[in-house]
Length: 220
Ligand SMILES: Nc1nc2c(ncn2[C@@H]2O[C@H](COP(=O)(O)OP(=O)(O)OP(=O)(O)O)[C@@H](O)[C@H]2O)c(=O)[nH]1
Ligand SMILES: [Mg+2]
Image (cartoon, rainbow, N blue to C red; front, side, top):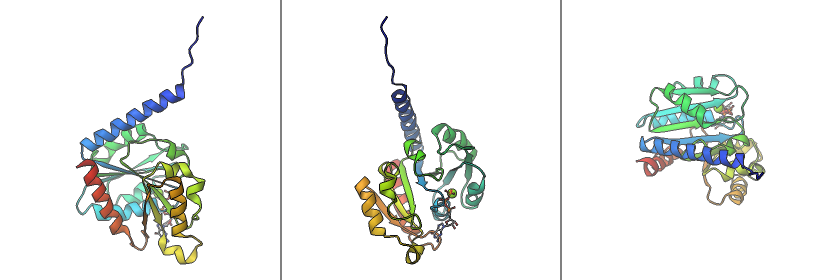
């Protein structure tokens, strides 16, 4: 009797990639630019999204899906700025595309000009999951240490943009913007960087201008 080995893991990966590509194309066709934020817990994703939504909603429609293991806290913080839906995973350390598809209609407008996805605070699991975003952004805060890119390479390798957040704290913490950028570029030379303090509203305008330009070239 002959036997055949099937690589289930590879098949699953390929299937997930196809579903993510289809989602990305569907969003593009609808004029929705999908931006996903990854970071370790507390790096400042929600605070940055509050400021970003405040600026972008002056001229664009914005929707936000935010993942957490428990609680609706982030969606409650974001709701005053843009329609926001919390996805609670009850323990899972990352979001998956079926959760995004299920949450989208709850936004009211399922195809806003900008769809932001805040993934669960974690530099490991989310990096291995494709959600069909157009832009993957990693937020690295000055309180985490400038050595993190080399220690968590997959998150940096799979992102296009690094936001170096909480720059207002630079006088108080041993963090070098140059070292963090050098370390990240060793992992992925093509990375682009933004330094900002969402708390002090420094650098957020430039960040939003960049997002508008990227949206225009990606989906318009
Ligand atoms: N000093 C300073 N603190 C900030 C800044 N941005 C955010 N914070 C603070 O950092 C803490 C975490 O911010 P969040 O925006 O909740 O971070 P997060 O990445 O969304 O956190 P999780 O969703 O739990 O992973 C809060 O106490 C914020 O007020 C900043 O630019 N400067
Ligand atoms: Mg958050």
